[in-house]
Length: 412
Image 1 (cartoon, one colour):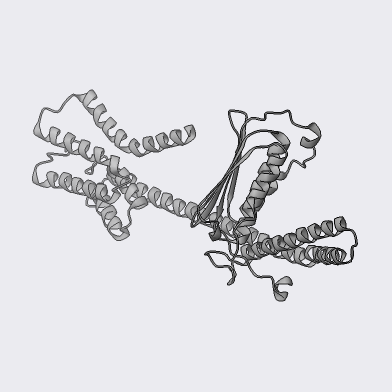
Image 2 (image 1 turned 180 degrees about the vertical axis):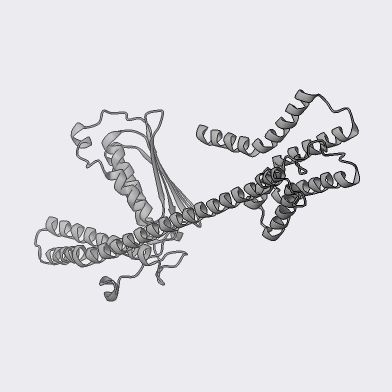
């Protein structure tokens, strides 16, 4: 912030420099020779000071300032032949017949003005008035060229340099955009490849697990074995469904092709798996949980519902690990365009189990954030001042997924 302020002040000083220079010269003349004692002196001082003050606007209104300067030069030139040198020192044959603001005005016009033809006309008029070609004095011609032609050349150089810098800046920005596009394309291709591998490898293995557990449920003679096989089969079926949604999201984010079978609107079943089961599970181990659900959950697409379920599941797992016994509140709000989740716990009421705390990988929240971002949401976790912890997630209510087909498996 300090650097920007310093740069702004330097730019303001640079913009005001020419005007301050002209006004400073006029002030120096007054200090050295005193105030004028005739009408011509006052008129010349007023004209020079007014045109010098106009230089404050040379960047915003360069053409207007140069037009005023040219008119001032015409008035000075006219005073030589019509008013006996009222505005010009006729005692000095080498005196310039143009305002002191001329070089600053003409260079600013060449640099900033858009009307190029009028700019060159004004430059030619000022150069003619300054050099007075009808005068054979080499000193007058040299001084006039230094006063007009050199500022024109400097303005042309500055304009070309500005255009070059702008072109290089545009090229750099274009290259940066291309790099972002290439990186995005590479990520999309990696997602497609990952989705294909998940479909071909993981789905195949889980499907075998489901089939084998189903067969075990039928052939087992022990009731406990049949119940365990059924639980294993149900977990495998749920994992297959979640894999299907996740692969669909990966393909959808890579191809930007929404599924025709997953449109916004009420879903056929419950939008979320039963959060009440997670609450009951936590309460069974001594963590009191209050569940509040607002809105219509049927408008959340299945992949969003599962992501929300995972957010609540991970949050309650962390409470059981790091804040045993802490009162916890789960608030889920279903909107037309987004789902808001807040899980907040107070300070723990019991000491945490060291073995249980150390059992995690330490990447739960990181993986959860990546999963939330994959569906276009945001996740925010923070420690509260009362010793508690809060987890806030914002999810889009609808996320399109690409159906898994035989052709999409192979990226065709």
